[in-house]
Structures are given as C-alpha cells and as structure tokens.
Figure 1 (cartoon, helix red, strand yellow):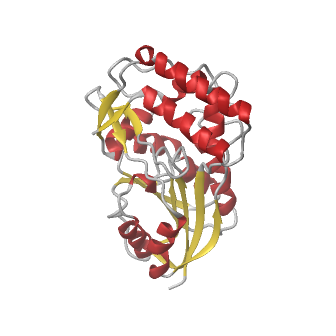
Figure 2 (spheres, helix red, strand yellow):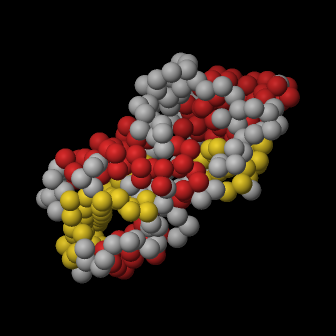
Length: 304
C-alpha cells in the first residue's frame, strides 16, 4: 500500500529545485521565488485535496488498463527509448528473436520487418492481443520473465524493453535470458529511470476492480545490471543513458511535444495525477527534473 499526497509531491519538487540552487545551478532570485511558492502551496493545502492510497498490482493487472492506449503518440519515454533500441537492433543480423515482456509488440513489429522470426512473451493477455494483431507472423505466448516458455539455446536475440523496473530481482531474469540465448547471441535491454533520477515513483493506474492500484517502478544503478549479467558470461557492447528533454514541462504544463491538454486533477481520495500538478509549479518542476536520465539502454553479448 502507498499513500500519495499532492502537496507532498509539489513540496518534494520544490525541495529538489532548491537543492540544485544550493549547489550553484540557480541564483538568488530563483531561490526567493521557490520559497515564496512553498509558502503559497502550504497556504493552499486544502485546495489540493488529501491524495489517496493504492494497493500493489501485478504487471498483468496494471497493463490491462494500458493496452488500448499504450502505443498512442506523446509518451515521452517511448519516443526517446524506441529509436535507441532500434539503432542497436539495426546492427544485428536477422535470426530468431525473443521479445521478452513484449507488451503491444512495438519492438516485435520492428524485428519482424527486419526479417527476424519473432517470439513474444508477456504476462498480460490484453497486451498480447494487441501484439498478435500487429505482428500476425509472430508467435506470442503468455509467460513470466523468471520462467520464459522458450527452450534452452533457442534464440539469437533477446529484447527486453521497459520491463525490468517492475521486477524485484534481476538475477533470475538474466539467468533466463542466458538460458534461452545461443552462445554469441545478443541481449538488448532498456529500462526507465525513476522520474527523479534515483527515485522510482510507483505508476498508479486503475486496477481490475476499478479502484486505483500501483505498479512498482524501481530505478536501478548501472552496477545492478552488471552484477546480474557479467557472471553469466554476458559482455557489454553498448550502454547509454538518454537525458530528459529540457524543459521537462512545457508552457502548458505538459511534456514538450505531448498532444492534448494536461489531464485533470485526480478525484479527492485518490492518488494525484502527477502531470496535472506540474502546471502549478512549472519552474520548480523543470529545475527538479533537469539533467536526469529518462532511461538506460544496454546491449550485451553472451560469450559463453
């Protein structure tokens, strides 16, 4: 169970922005503006509502609500991560490719166009249904990252995109990747960074019972991926951490380039919609998020 209060999030952003100013990134005028904004927020606390609590969901439960709209344009993370992953896939010859935690098949579709024989595995039947419609030539199977329904030494390439942040322990997942890969095969992994660098804010969605629920969203150190991968014979061929756009919040309070209006505030008694809060303090939000990575993207090769 988590409890998220809108005032706590806003004051937290102000605090990060003030720490950046304390480190020399902003001037006295900026500090004065932030302190005045904090006072104003505290005076208006009742207007922001009490926030709310949410219980933890499984990946299948959380992604069921995302499946119909997951591929819609304007997702800042997908817009940045997708081209980087595809550039790594372009370097690899066609073969048998496993898209692990394939979701709606956005990478599986690209792999199929590149001439790969595609297998997709995901825990969400709703996401798999979208993937099957998108990639009719692929084989899509329900399964978990810790127990992939794929034989040993069966694939030339594994892609796992934006999924490991939901996994409590990387080691058994990387062990599965090593098991299904043929020697010399490649592993391409992308993972989101927490919205504030090393803080993995839970992702709140509507659960199957209609009430808010959350999916854990861990923000890991690069060393954690290496500790899971290197003992299994994986070697690093590429690592990149793309940065968030600046400004992080546009003039309308939405991510730059995002279509549509800022979403409305969450109903009283539910966790806040973060994007609906950013317009209240855009300067602090931009300062807090500035210079933080949005994702980490790896390419490993299995050498043994």
